Figure 1: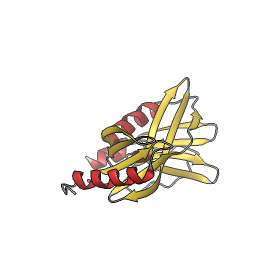
Figure 2: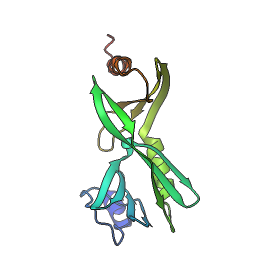
Figure 3: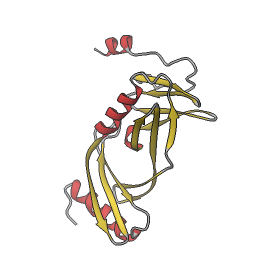
Figure 4: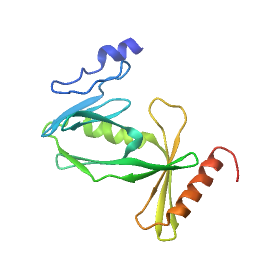
Length: 172
């Protein structure tokens, strides 16, 4: 079946300047005013001033499609607490797509599919999202913790560490 997927998969579109892995194939693509966006099983390739950069599906916090504009909120890893990963959202990036094809649908499906579970916990000074996500190319999920601004960081890290231990089956 791999050969069939390779034959039927779309080729990278003209103007795409990223380099796909050998086992990475285009699921959908669209052109924006800033360059070509390409979705693969591993993530979403975004145009950058100096080329293209892939963002793994597990690092896209939010993606919306509205009135011809795909808005992508990427998360950056800010640290670790035990085996959990602390993240923070970067500013939203907007891409106007004149001919979006199936890209918005594929992006939404892939982002949603990467989320195994999520829970928002009220904490001193704010709250935090605890999200278990699938990582492309890995069988082990990752626990991401996204605190809201103002939330007590020490408490977030302690609870994140304890939660990761509990998910692994090690009660503190």
